[in-house]
Image (cartoon, rainbow, N blue to C red; front, side, top):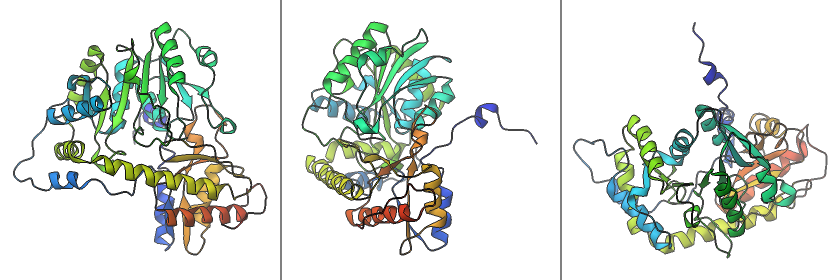
Length: 405
């Protein structure tokens, strides 16, 4: 029997989804699983989306490889409403922000190039970099510092002749950290000085809980040729399954290059695009205000509950809907698997994402997990209670008495 390619064999598995099989088996045993492992919002999508996609008949055609014009117009208009100049020709519609990330690695970088990335980072960056033959060079942050960005000089020290870009997720998945205007401008200065691409994953920009300005990479003057922004409708409208994202740049060569990859996959799903046009055009600001308020309340709840569990470290969270948490365990991968295979509390258990897969530096994240607070508050309370009880029984726990929640 022929073997799979070496490329496939060395492709990293998703730390977010690799425990899914254990969760399925737990449910077969009758255990209710609280899913805190994946960023799948439980908040209803705008009705305008469903109204738009429900009235079709006849053949369903391919669309333009760059995305349908009404959607590109709607996205550009949305940016302009936020005071950011953007033309419809400055963006491509992609199959989620995942494809936008893939397009970025394939369009901006050659095999063997290096990209500096703030660590911990969205785990799937590793997979896309692997596909493109690109090396991710991590600049590490620490939970003790609330995953704050290191000094600009520390980042600049990572630059080599092979460095071609800097990648930042703001707000951060998986930490919820926000990078300030001053910090982004320091990175922009480095980018300009070394003629690098500056890639900003801004998928979670609608989930920002602070009051200071949240800057987009598109607002940085003098970097039109360097900046690439990744965006998505998935989180913003609770439409993860619609798979509609955006590759954005004012660099005409990058747009033309990324379009070649878009043409190779023909087009994005037609109905999803049409529904998202309606979501952009017809969703009132009150929808976003209510969603932001709900996630802030969930954030406050999990920080309060986790702080009651001795040995658990929960950092400051300013955005997105994730917490990267340190647990008093020997190995978070083993603990997460054990919770699904060997533990339940009143017929319930929890699936989390072990954090080791969010790091490129070996050994980091070994005692950390990512928690996605995408459940209603009563379910979050039950889930955190379950985690606390599990830590009291886990054979590999750093023994402390666990407070009741």
